[in-house]
Image (cartoon, one colour):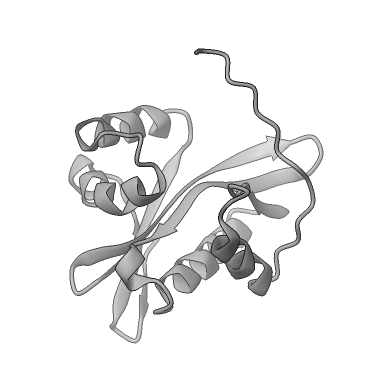
Length: 149
């Protein structure tokens, strides 16, 4: 699935190693612990587990990236869960993130999802404002226990 907004940008799923690689620098703004050399390999492994990577490009440059998966969850049914959503820092507030978010919501509807959800780091206040502005509700706290030291 791809979409074009007035010819200005294109949204598509990254299905080839080349497309995945083009998303690396933007994704690493959100996930800096992932080395550039390891990014494509990690995504390709996760794709075997249902992970998908969508990207928005403008002028042949990747501006926004979203990693997501579709899950069937007991509490919410068929759900599109966003693992990662980030816009290149210099491209924020230009509508790219909103366009990709809206594309994901439409994709979820097309896939028969009943819910659209994501987690966001507690320190990401600008992201929280963005999600609330897009109609999302804060419905839970996410807890984590690191198992490897």
